[in-house]
Image 1: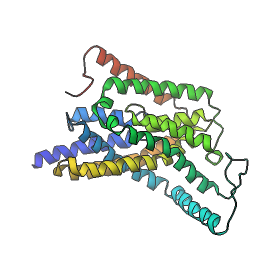
Image 2 (image 1 turned 180 degrees about the vertical axis):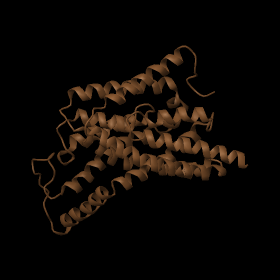
Image 3 (image 1 turned 90 degrees about the vertical axis):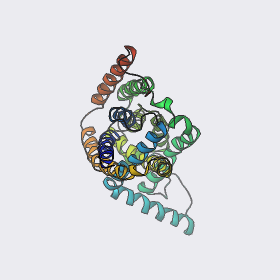
Amino acid sequence: MWFSLAMDLLQAIILGIVQGLTEFIPISSTAHLVFASRLTGVYDGHPEMLTATMAVIQLGTLAAVFVYFAGDIWGIVSAFARDHWNLVFNRRKMRFSGTDGNRPIFLSEESWLGWLVILGSIPIGTVGLLLKDFIEGPGTKNLWFIATMLIVVAIGLVIAERVGSQRKELRHFGLVDALTQGFCQVLALMPGASRSGSTIMGGLFAGEKREAAARFSFLLSIPAISASGLLELRKAVVILPREALVPLVVGTAVAAIVGYLSIWGLLAYLRRNTTLIFVVYRLFLGVAILALLYFGVIDPVVR
């Protein structure tokens, strides 16, 4: 039992490191977790167990977002409550300012940002529920599929970098920004796409600055990761073996620590640099996987 638990702890730590490093960097955390699970042999032949494990470990990176953006989140929540309280009890009429993304004049920038996060989360919530069985199934763990999505989003990032005006700060965001990044976030349901990569791509297409697009991407991740993580946590309690509980907690904690450092690093990087390095990495990895699959060096699915 001790040997089995030790191996499970090692596997969990590896998954936690991979999750923390890749959740916020636009290179696809799910794709890398699938690779890591193959190398470590985590739940071979049991895609539903692997999906549950990955979703729960994601809660670690969610904790990293809460800690890193604690001030922003508190500002959004408190302003949201205050502004809507005033609307209801002071009978303020809803008017639009005509500036800053047509923000209603009775809303502060913080509470308007809260509404944008809510609206931007609707697409992934809707599609996620409709395609839940397909997403959790073995088809999306197929390496042909993952490699293709790595390349597709890389090309999308290149185009977005070229055509996006990159002039909008977070305070200028409006409905177009929220819905563009929200619909692009739907791509994150497909392994290989990358939630941060897809949403940053959407932000660039909408004319946002890179760092602003990344910041909104992180805030937009809160409802998505919370919903998937908590739903899968309930499922994980039932389907995962009892001895996996401690390793799962350890892996989640590791993901939180590494994820916090990743957020800090990515925001600092995007202040001065383009997404080119991530595009090159995605293209190289995607093409390499396709080549290995074509020549039969690796199998597309775990057998």
